[in-house]
Length: 473
Image (cartoon, one colour):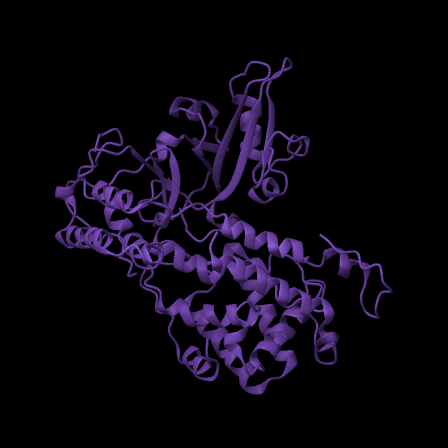
């Protein structure tokens, strides 16, 4: 873990301690892309993967207007720090490799690698579930856990997961009915991405699937076993089924070859001092922007972009996201997290917003946005809800969109929302803040109304530009 991680922890401690003193919790944590179809044309050849190349109970007297539910459901400091620790423990990226290993990986993309065992599968945009299968005299015992639950209880074979369905009851039932019987005491673990129909899933890539798909990306499962588990309710894909191989060198465009060779030279010649930061800020974004042209679209739908690549590099695992997905995820995930649960804390101006109280906490969010808009230091509030909303407004029109990305708003609805936000800023009227938050919450939570992009959208509009003239983010 680096200094940035510890700074985040320290900032969060300071932020939360101040919030607790005031009984407010407003600070909650929750390269150029290439359009699809612009890569090589004609017959292409892919390289074989086998080729050798909670909570506080405040025991003091409750203050007026603070219910028991306020303290029970308030996001605690421990939970917020856990969010940061999990962020610090993310799947390793390209900067975790040595200089020689990064050069070897680029050679692999150039179909020149003859020395390293590199195995790549597609990182699919879905909901994670871990399945544990344990043999017993009475038959298999099946355990299921979401990623969040497994973080709290790391043992998949814990009793709490025996009755859990995880993120998909369909997937667990398939294992209950169809997985081969194990010997008593034998255990197997599978890590799976569950892809539901677009209108049912809170993910930012559309695949146009009508049937639930379960992609096993870690675990001992063959293609035959995946087929045997599949039914009309859920289709299973084994790790072999989601293998991705780069185009052969002769099928890569001259422009891509030149870029990859240049990146390799940069890695080779950059000094040791600052090398990891250079890889993280320069090399990885550049490679991420080339993934689509080197690997094509998704296995699930060739018109959909890849979320990323899961790379097994000599028994080590790392992730390389694609630019198309990463940019959308960066600006939308914090807003989605904000509306994922109700808010019970952070009402700094009850005289302005208490009359608008609702069970979702939208009056609190309105207060949080009000505090941000009326602050003299917007740059000092980067963890605030208001800052993240304004960042969404700023960056969305800057992203070079591809087809089949999922955005909270259509261009027309985004223009309408920006106009409402501009009027809120200029009038500073509390009721308009609340109405704006209600509109935003509905757009974020109604998954079936998210806009699926064609790649030709223009999200820029005059109200967005006027907002950014008033608020600097």
